[in-house]
Length: 264
Image 1 (cartoon, one colour):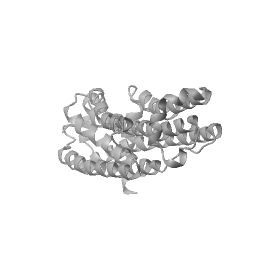
Image 2: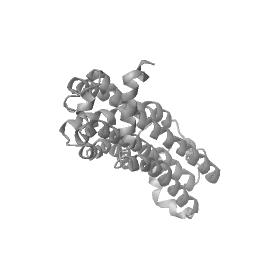
Image 3: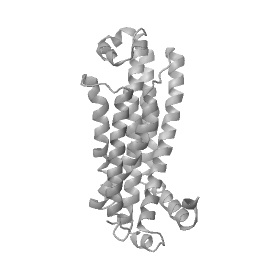
Image 4: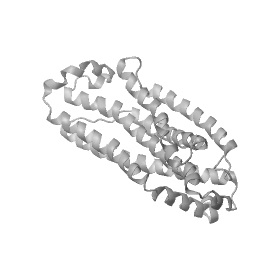
């Protein structure tokens, strides 16, 4: 592959190692899948498994969000199904988004703080090649983090299926994995690349990543108020809108990117 040859490969490896060796970002990148995809679902499963059946009476109003084929299940089964298919997708996507945003912050904001703009300018690569390498590097971190998170969720789902005697993955995860996850990875990467223009360094850029995560939190939590329901079609529409926004962001970033300023 042309992308993995010569200067392209050297710059890609330099960017990957630069993010991984960043002492402020690596612990966070490792902690997010551990918290979002392992600790929180496992803790919730443990609480449900040991809690008495009558303790689930107070959340029966939320069972209306569940499909008809699980309405006959026990309170423990429906509660974990609700958690696994409404709350866990939010955690999963937040992990993907924040991983992409943090790695992008390090890649685009780190040049300023690290004083490595001059080295970047001396490479024989064009501005577009440098930009694409940085984007691919950020998306690599988002992909790996999402992969680890999903494997953890599959394992936890298998354990929950044994303990609670029910299969918990719904069709919503098809859209989440193949539509929303890539779209949100690109969104997190490009939004931080754009915000790096007004940030002094990678840390100040990363501090803005919370604003990119807010729409995901609101999207999944507001449905619990009864305003709407995120079914298969609704998530497809959301994924389509994010993809359109990605296209607009890509054009804006590519037009403004300039390695001599990285700097914009």
